[in-house]
Image 1 (tube, rainbow, N blue to C red):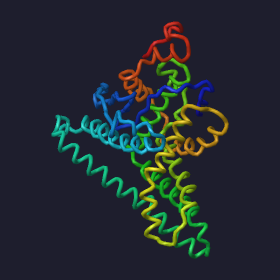
Image 2 (cartoon, rainbow, N blue to C red):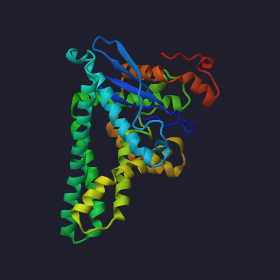
Image 3 (spheres, helix red, strand yellow):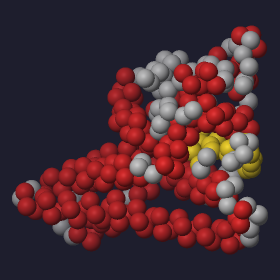
Image 4 (cartoon, rainbow, N blue to C red):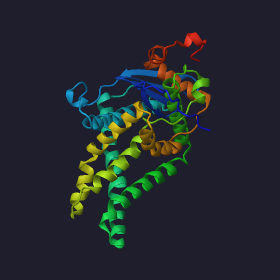
Length: 317
């Protein structure tokens, strides 16, 4: 049963993602990847990540900054996923050519975008256009398209969930959320406290995806043109705008806990019931190791909640 998020939950600023047999946590420009190897040991890699146009004024512009954050997340995600996979592939464990690696990751990113556009834009639009024509109502096009896009995504999530590696990835995803929720609820970072914390978090990428779908339905509703080519081009060209708006919403959701924000966040949290699973204690320990590599959680508890873990006799392990 899910533990409810503490009402006094505070924003920590840390975030992350699950990787193969591990967790990546990021705090500002600093990130750490913790991976549990086959021998049971935990390997941690710490590094800095500078995003596209990092430090420039454009990164502070609302909505605009959201698209850059999306690009950065995808880029860093590929990097840390590749690192975690190398822990289980002796041929790739040695440091490779950085230029070659960047080219490969860039190609993977481009192909991923192409597949995403085909699967989540072209397919739903084509099917929705066919159905709306049969129903004789163009006004239903955007609504049907949005429903179909959500159906395609949920089908995709359900299909890959049948894979054992993906199920374990979802467990590590749950461990990532539990560690962050534990701290943001004002609890010392221990296995016991993390285990009791919820595996759902309002700033999750799954919630971001849900916001993207909802924002696109609203935005496309006000765009009217008879040209199919123009409609499709606008759907692609407006990706930065949609992702930017969704980013601002999810940031607000992570810092606010009023009834309206909770209602808006609900669909994303429901989706996380599919993309996260309950982790075991060893997975939680991996998440904790990643947090501790980039985040002084003891200082955070003093600053945000006014007490030190030592005052409660808490131990981080």
